Amino acid sequence: MDGPLWTDEHAPALAELPQPAVRESLDRAVAEPLNLILHGPPGAGKTAAVRALADELHTDPDNDLVELNVADFFGRTKKEVSEDPRFSSFITAKRRRNSSKADLIKHVLSESASYAPVSGEYKTILLDNAEAIREDFQQALRRVMERHHETTQFVVTTRQPSKLIPPIRSRCFSIAVRAPTADEIVSVLEHIVAEEDVEHDADGLEYVANYADGDLRQAILGAQTTAEAEGEITMDAAYEALGSVGDDDRVEGMITAAERGEFQDARTTLDDLLVEEGLSGGELLDDVLRVARSRSVGPPPAELHRLAGEIDVELAEGTSDRLHLSHLLAELGR
Image 1 (cartoon, rainbow, N blue to C red):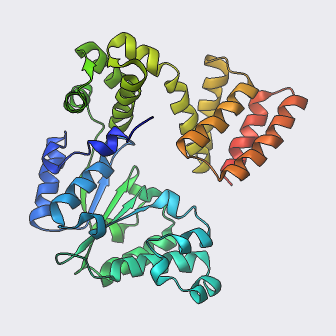
Image 2: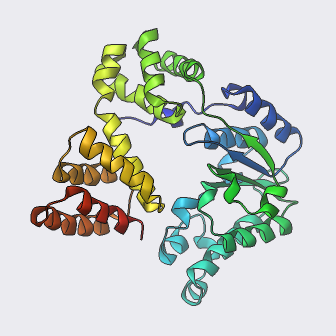
């Protein structure tokens, strides 16, 4: 996309969140700060809701909201964690040298919670995609929550609240964020396209909403893709712009599922792309490299290209595209 993402440019305020029950629960958290768990499917608006809450709670939300994407954070090397500008000020060279990665991450959690807020009486730490936190780190997080409860609000977002240990769930107020309806998505899109002054019609916005299948973020980005590619959002324009994007979304989902160890989901998507869409192994391997690069998913580029080179040789020498691409998915999950 050429310009700033509409998901960032049109981030909702608390009063603009499309789900009334979520708005009411977060309004309660403004009046009485609470630790929170927001749970629901991908793209339902959990992270956007937390950012809207922080804007309402903090005079300086840029500094008093600390966001840790757990899937990204725990997947980093020790060097990458220690060089992150958010944490480098309290990770000394000696600590980096003498600590294991696990100890370093626990130190980051504790130090992030211990620092005084820039403005107001407390700050907010968001742990996004928390289903990826190992149980030993959850126990460490529980202790940090107990130690710093007076100055730090903890907000956890997850697709699977059952993966959180009971001591954390008992310390948080739980808010269910369901997938938005097509009508709710259309309402959000109407506001955005009016702000962007994009020509559109009702059929076009409805098409984009149905294409997103309950994923609000995907709907907003789909509308932006259509507007930039076609200059308008009509049904024909959306069909032209989003036809190929759908496969890219599935490839991205396949890569992400493989990295998380969700091999059954990843292989189901692989089968769909090979059989239903009729892609060859070589075409799909090219798509994996392109999508990983353009959407910043998957392992570091050098590692991915090394793996892709090995799989490319296997595809040239072997007889089963599915077998060799499944090998790639297994390697991504290591």
